Image (cartoon, rainbow, N blue to C red; front, side):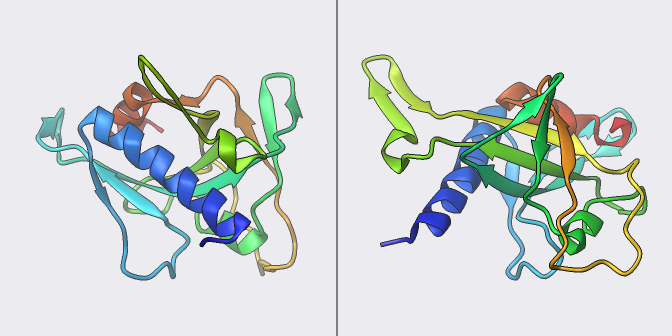
Length: 167
């Protein structure tokens, strides 16, 4: 049996995998998480000047979201993790996906006669315009403002992947 933290993290990754599947994207995962990336997403075919555009994401789950003025105030990244997403120098664009989940694991999914509902919502943010932290400390937290307008759906995940250079 998974402990509560493992269960919540696995649910968050699987939530995103379901969206990617619904979007018709190919999901990849490195054999070792040494670079702060959990999953990669690739569209097949040509999109403008790009063939098989790809993005990568660090996925975080959050059971007690807080925020104001159209943003979540996510405080779950340390400075090292932040630097794995910040700045424009990555060959493959990187995103932070924050999946807000119920505090009670029994509420992660609900079955109805119409299908399965996954709770609650996911959000995305690009940190490419943020300056990486010099001398990052794994013990210091780096807050991130995540726009609540950036809801992660199958359509938005596909759009992020297809138009990855625009983010």
